[in-house]
Amino acid sequence: MRLDKPLPPGSTIGILGGGQLGRMLTLAAARLGIRCHIYAPEADSPAFQVAAAHTIAPYDDYEALAGFARSVELVTYEFENVPAETAAFLAARVPLAPDARALATAQDRVAEKTFLSGLGIAVAPFAAVDTVAELDAALSTIGRPAILKTRRFGYDGKGQTRIDRQKAAATALAEIDLAPAILEGLVSFDHEVSVIAARGWDGVVACYDVPLNRHENHILATSTVPSGLDPALESKAREIAAAILRALDYVGVMGIELFAGRFGLMVNELAPRVHNSGHWTLDACLVSQFEQHIRAVCGWPLGNPARHSDVVMTNLLGDGVQDWQRLAQEADVGLHLYGKSEARRGRKMGHFNRLSPRSGD
Ligand code: AMP
Image (cartoon, rainbow, N blue to C red):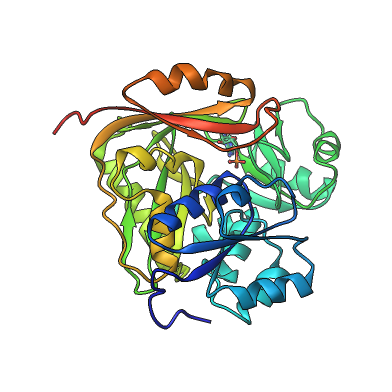
């Protein structure tokens, strides 16, 4: 189902997922006079604190989903693992953006890399593997070291293992619980970057500047803009992003993670949603990635993605959030806390954006 006209202020939209991304989407929607109804299974979802309405139910509770669909004019989501049946059920009742095809492509690493290769976009060498024999065969073509990842449900380095010179295929498969997998050649990249891109129902595309992303323990630590990447590579990254969104007839914001190196650019992963490496847009742009997503899915004109400041976004993980008082005193810092009660180790509790005047203009 497509949206036939822009949703005016006063409309209510549905969001699947109640984490920090849902919360920041809701806050951005509120700024435009749009209400959000959050659907999530966890009773303590941070997005509930700021939303006009919420439903606590599992994603396969079709009665609850039907009630949710009746109460909203459109459904979007904050996470890519929305079950296909849930997406199909909702899409039969209300417009769903991004649509089921975007979900199917981004949920399965083999589907994702096959789709990207089909567009002529470079990705790491890869092969689908389900058995030890297939993994041995794939290792002999792709070579070692390599990375074995589960096809589905992997994030922040979970569900993956590195295969060095010694590791036996059977050991590696056991490490990922014998899940259907993908073997990827190890890319020797110089930098990890991303593109936060948006596309509206009318096909208009807008991309933010490319951040340089630094990870610690597989979790994003900082995003820095400007990235310092060669401007020609940055525009190539934006072109790649636009080609992906067009090919999927995509509506909404997408995060596209890339490797940059001597080889140029390779796409690592697509996130069919707002992305942690776009959190800097909350303070360094007039229209953040969250507002941009709301604008895109609601059929509004896309906002200007231009950046008015240089910025470093730093995630506050676990106990790191105890720094809130010091950070709140700093004049050049935009502080964002997610309202989570328990600061478990490695848990994303908030982030801050340190701004400085735009350089190089
Ligand atoms: P992913 O879950 O695919 O985003 O992978 C998590 C992190 O592992 C990435 O951000 C990279 O730092 C690293 N990584 C993933 N795939 C590869 C690869 N094929 N070659 C080298 N590093 C990789």
